[in-house]
Length: 118
Image (cartoon, rainbow, N blue to C red):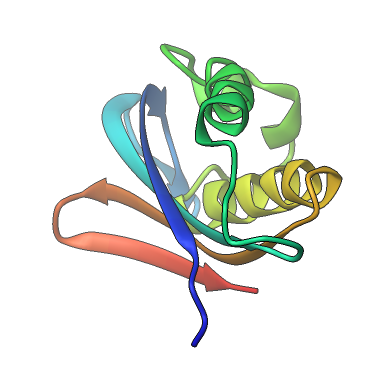
């Protein structure tokens, strides 16, 4: 039997995206981010400590215009590209804790979710 954990976070941020040489207006989203992970060594994870680290990470995006952040310079901040950056960064945090990544899910609204599986 495999077991794992899932955290859910919300980020209020704005962005504009470019498709077919047309850039959208700057608009807000409440991004829902789900992170699934497991432990390599034990079934018990110190939720409080790790959750605080993730909160500290996500505060970098809260209330921001994503297009202006360093990680999005030259990158179209679509839901998919945001998910890839979150995956990259959170995977590093997990590995420091001897945890393994299962999925990151990012939704820009209740009907659209982008999922990356490790």
